[in-house]
Length: 372
Image (cartoon, rainbow, N blue to C red; front, side, top):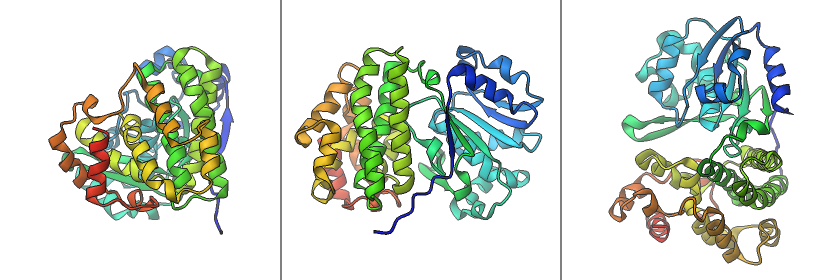
């Protein structure tokens, strides 16, 4: 099989002190910095950014960035940045990618123009993008490894992907201490998100021998250390291991993309505001069961889970989420009669058709009923 492994990013691992020193190397650049007030305060970063000569600080807690937020930010920017530094979860890194891709069109941007750019993908011709550095604060999204970002249009119940080869981060910095403030719920959700990337990459139509090795390594790390970190949230070694598990998953799915569970998850987040990690994890086992006959190297997959059969995989999900969050639709307030509406929005191109089995609406409905 011919395949290409293409993730042109420089990755660095720092402790918190090294990370702060590294930031100061860029103080002379005109920069956009994305970092929440909570993060600035908890990690004592404000004094670092006070030394920057010219900075546009986006200090909101970013969750599911939408067109209105992007429009507001672009309207308030008064200079062209030389660099974007995004310190946060996947949503913050996605926002950095969107700014990088669309800044060229800033003078004409409004809600309708952004929507047009997302639909036509005119930004693919942009050669004047802004380089950026990604610093993940969750061990989950893998956005620090990919060239795409999700931007939401909640007004029209739509999700758009910005996707361009130039949107790989210039550098990604892995700092385990930055993940240590996550509470149990977010630690679980982001850990399950990373696991979903590894699992879906493993059975993706684009899976290959190399990506399956990365996915298995990720699964092995996450299934061991997610329960451990949930039992001891302050353990930095466990946090570091989770960050590496997420990193390997990111490398895997940056080459293969995700599949049916991600496709079904998008309306769950859009309509019911279910955290993305939980929205994906809800259907993972049901999708696994249906894909099982198409999965290569099944024994190695089970071995990475420490499982004898796929029922052991289901048991792991139940055990790890016990006492934190039930992984079913009803626990998130979804009503049975709303499943029909979810089904209509659950097929996303590039995700559902990347699954070894393309589920029709009846099969998607069955999956959702089984996880109700």
